[in-house]
Amino acid sequence: MAAFARSAPCWVDVQLPDLEAGKRFYGELFGWTFRAGEGRYADAYSGGRLVAALAAKQDGRMPTAWGIYFATDDIVASVARIREAGGQVITEPVRAGRAGVLAQAADPGGAVFGLWQAGDREGFQKQNEPGSFCWTEVHTRQKDRVDAFYEEVFGFQGTELDDSGTAEPGAAESGPGFRMWSPAGTEPGPDTAVGGRSVITDAFPAEMPSYFLSYFAVEDCNSAAGNAVRLGGRISAPPFDIPYGRMAVLQDDQGAVFAVLQPPVSEKGAE
Image 1 (tube, rainbow, N blue to C red):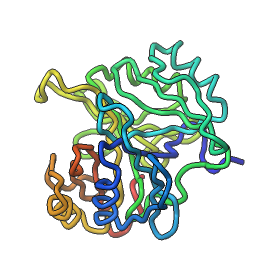
Image 2: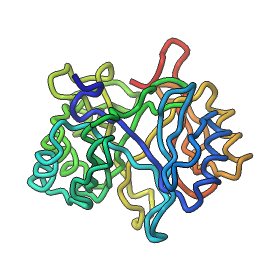
Image 3: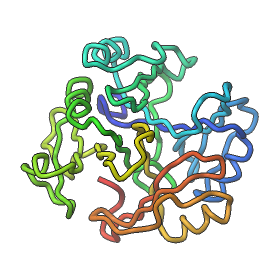
C-alpha cells in the first residue's frame, strides 16, 4: 500500500537560480542537510529523513517558487480528469528514473501544481514536524470554479471556515471564506484536512497570479522569521496568530515564497 493516500500532498520542491545559495539559506533556516554531487537537484533531509528538494532552474524564465505535488496511483487518469474539469496540463507525465512519474498542471484560476505517481520514492519521509512540510493552500480569485475543480479532480470534500477558524456550513455564502480540503472517504473537517483554498481579494494588486502557498512547521515562528531576514530573505507577512498556531509568510534570499507555522503547544502539526 502506498504511503500516501490518493490526492494527499506528498512532495515539495523549489526552483532556484542559485542552488548552492539555496542550500545555505534553507540549511541554516531549517537545519536541512543535502546530498552532495546530485547535479541540479538536491534532496533535503531533516534529522536524516527526506523532506523536500532544491532544484537549479534550467530556464531563467521559470518562476522562482515552491511547488507542491499531490499523490496519484494513476497519473494518466488524473491528467485526463484535469483536462475534463477545465484545468491545463503543463507537463505531460514523464518518468523520473525509478523514483516515479510526475506531471504539472494548472487549475482554472491559473495556480500550478504537480502530480506524483510513486515508484521507488513515495514522497516525504517526515512531515508535520519542525523542519518539514505541514500544509498547503491555493490562493485564487475564482473560488467557485476552483472549488469544483479540486473536488472533481481529487475528490476533495470541502469545509468552509468562518473568520474565527471555526467550521461553518454557511460561511461560503457570507463572504470569501477559507475552505479546507479533506480526502474522499473521510469525514470532512479540520481533523482530516490535507490542504485548503484561500481567496485573493481586491485588496491585492490585480496582477497577482493565483498560487499555492506551502507551509513548513517550526518550533518558534518569530525566531524563524528573524533568521530568514538575517540570512538575506524577507518577511511578506509578519508573525501572527491563527486558530492553528502562529504563522508568517516569508521569502528566501532568491524570492521564493513560503510560510512557516508554529503549531499550538498541544498540537504536533498542522491539521
